[in-house]
Length: 330
Ligand code: UT7
Image 1 (cartoon, helix red, strand yellow):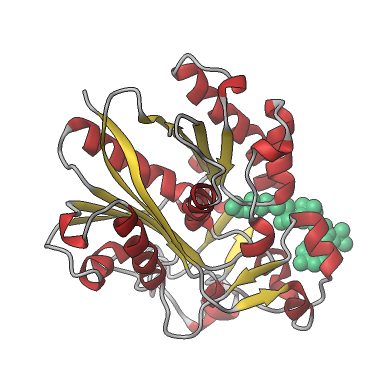
Image 2 (image 1 turned 60 degrees about the vertical axis):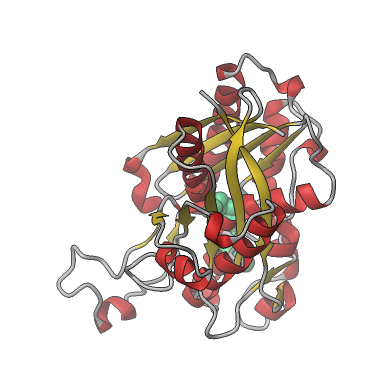
């Protein structure tokens, strides 16, 4: 079977920077609390009228160009987001339209913080199997329109930010590119990190009462998420290495989902690698869920942190709970 590799990467961050100081003016929080507990100093929020599909399309344009392709040469696309422009249809079809692509298949993935890695695994499988030669993979989020910017929502709202990232996956020689993907879920924790409404289980799906009860806003049991994350990240990275007969010492860089700087530091410690081997940019963008891994990957490529021949491990953990890794020989 042929291999599958990343041919180009791109990212899109809204220009509007929101500092911790700005949030401090809106709720009972402090610069010190946010930086100490999360590592975040600022994040980006979109201006009204910009959706996840816009950020995704912008990142995709860059990734396609860097892959040396045009949108017409993309044969399939996968879009991961928890914050779609519409309840349905998903963002994939919106990107197909925005980029003027042919009437290709457009698949939406809803596994939240691990969405990009699930989406990447779909592209990997299609390309390795010879179904398609060029698959676009996007992770993009607009979190800011779903945040409660007041003291009642402070545990969630200081963490999240908006952004988009994309890659193009294409064929490679075997043993080069994406070596393997490892995907997991444990639905018994579904309600530990969720947005409940609109909910098809309710009649009607959304009501004034539900809004008054704040059921349309994010709920997070931060401690539980934290404790599972620090266990699952190293576990799924070790799984990827073992599956390829490799070890931690072979790793050039780990790019984890940017959930919290303390989680990233705990991952480095648990793996026994120096902190600088585990990439972090959370201080600039906050947690952008499905967008964080492709944004970080694009920055690593641009800054020369990843070079040809490097062994790169992407890893993520989040709502579901879901967790995943992808091991790449660059
Ligand atoms: O992408 C995956 C999704 N999410 C994550 O990965 C998040 C994982 N969890 C975390 O990152 C951390 O649990 C948080 C950053 C969310 C919270 O940190 P923590 O150290 O677990 O704090 P805590 O929830 O135990 O709260 C400690 C205190 C509480 O006050 P009391 O009960 O000790 O008086 C909170 O009410 O901090 C309070 N608090 C805040 N104070 C100031 C909660 N949010 C804030 C805030 N500013 N924004």
